[in-house]
Structures are given as structure tokens and as C-alpha cells.
Length: 118
Length: 106
Image (cartoon, rainbow over all chains, first blue to last red; front, side, top):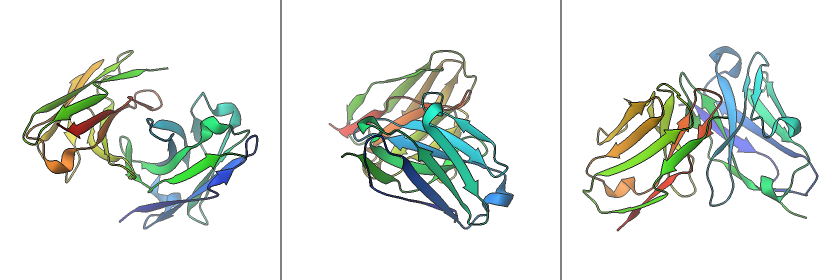
């Protein structure tokens, strides 16, 4: 069964860069031809799509985050990554990674809480 | 940007009730709409895609309908496991979620 697992620091200082990695198990990122996505959820609030990345390097970013966002994929390690620069307290959230299946997000990681605080 | 308005934000119901949640899109999204269920501390779970297509393993008491700008999620005979928060999501242009509906015990 496909599994996704987020990893990265749980605490980031304001103005610094948030970096997360999602490791995919039981499927190959390079051969599956899917997009892989990031979604976040501030505490007690709703869901926000951050961006999507394909094994061929194509990316799509939420326009509201585009200027601060970098997405990448490493097929040799079967993982994909997120970097969000110049973070503020508003970027505090649970960050999920997921697979974009034939229609929408059909497999999700468990999520990881990232707190922006000095 | 396509905006999604979901209502109600909270819904109190009893086991056995029929529950209806509505989403409205700011422009036509054809049937590019999905429904997710989320329980506290867990990732969302995909229930329905393409407005009305039930995911494998999802109980048949869940159903979705609509097209264009108006969509509904119906839960027939609410079960204890169904108390959760539900989100709709459009995927016509990028991805946008509704604000969520928390289904709580009456």
C-alpha cells in the first residue's frame, strides 16, 4: 500500500526558510507519472493547496505563495521537497504531502506540525 | 481564483439522521469536485470525486451530486463513525477547498 511520510523541523524562526521532505514508499515516484502535492492546515482552520511537482520537474504553485515557494523532487531517493522562504507566524500549520491521483488527492501522509516562532 | 463557499460551517445531528452539506463555486467547475472527510489529528480521506463517484470502500450511505456551481454531499442514516469535518474541493483550476463543515453530535 502506498505510504507517504513528511519529515523536517517542527520549529522555524520568523524570516527563515521552512524545509520539508515527503518520502514515498511502495511506489516509484519516477515511474508512476503522478503529480505529488503539498497541502497545509493552520491550527483549527481549513485546508490550503500549496503546490504540486511531477517527476519530470514540472511544478505548479499556489499563486498566493509563488514568490516564496520552491518545490523539488529527487527520484533517486523517492522523495519530494518543499521550501518556503521568509516565513511568518501565518505559516504555522500542519503540512501534509499527498499524491494527485487520476482526479485529486487520493493518498496522504499523516502530516507534520511546523510552528513559526522565535 | 475559484472560490468555494461551503455551508453550514457546523451541523448538529443524531445517529440515523440524514445530513446534507452544500458547496457553491464562484464559477462553473463542471463536475470537478471532490469531498473529503477529516477526523481530529488525521489526514483528510477522499470520499467522492467527480462530484458523485464514490471511492472504493466508502459506505454507500455517502452520496454526492451537482454540477456547474452547486454541489451537495448527503449522508443517509448518519453513523457514529461519521462525526467528523467534511471539506469539498474544486480541481477545475488548481485546487481550492471549502471552509469545512463540522458534523457534531446533537
